[in-house]
Amino acid sequence: MTPAVVAAVLAAALTHATWNALAHGIRDQLLAFTLVGSGGALCGAALACFAPLPAAGAWPPLLFSAALHVVYQALLMRSFRMGEFGQMYPIARGTAPLVVTVLAAVFVHEMPDGWQLAGVLLASTGLVGVALWGLRGAGRSPHAGSGSGDAVSGSGDAASGSGDAAAGSGDAAAGSGDAASGSGTGAGPQWPALTAAVCTGLAIASYTVVDGVGVRAAGSPLGYIAWLMLLEGLAIPVWALLTRRRALVAELRPVALRGLLGGALSVLAYGLVLWAQTRAPLAPVAALRESSIIAGAAIGALFFKERFGWPRTAASVLMVGGIALMLHGT
Image (cartoon, rainbow, N blue to C red):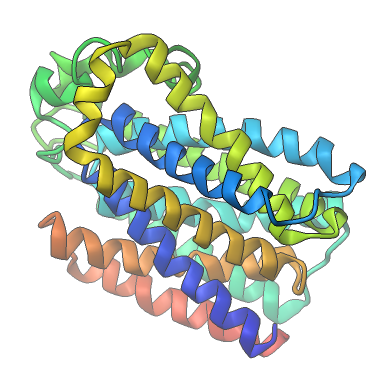
């Protein structure tokens, strides 16, 4: 990877962690992702007016990726409701690079060299392992266990069919939320939250490989990201409108600026990644992108008052080591 690609992916990592934190900070996750999706769709529509249309061969992966992104957002909403940001974010992001490495080798025929493979393994295995260690005895986060008020901000979020259905039906844990995070007393791992976070990582890996194929066939990375954000950004806002109806505008107003900013940042973050994927192999880009885990853990500690601790310090060291090995190989 060239210095320009490395800089772009690192900027994308920081931007990605920031927009995820903005979304997590909005207590009603359906509202949060409605605003993020709306912001992304507006940016996509504006870009589509100026960017060339993607080539015909890019449309099948683009449409498939848009569907995968909707599933990803639904799973991310669920994991954010059930666990701490500083734990769910590392698990979701740390799962992806290793899976991308395997998928890229099988479907795109990109075989990593020894250094790259060692770097991906070090970063991914270390980060996922440390994140899982952090779940031992983890108590339920105040944000996730805020009873019926936060749980689903009305019954609408619990009924979020296509959005939350992809993540399971169960935000019904609103009233009995402690059961959804293990014992609720900090006695055991948050297995439902852990499952949602790991599934989020699998969705990330899937759309990363699909987009790697699509953006290379598009002829215009800007046109690809414009149409991807426009298509994927509409799904959750449309569902929120159908379920919340007239109450939606009033509910969105207090958090509108924060959520729309998150949507704009999501476009920037993924646009940088897609550009990088046209200039470097998928697996190193995916692994380097997950340096956002370090930023996410720091944001969780600083803004959500989640403890950082030595496991997350170890994750930072492992990530830096893995990045060094990947760059050595390129």
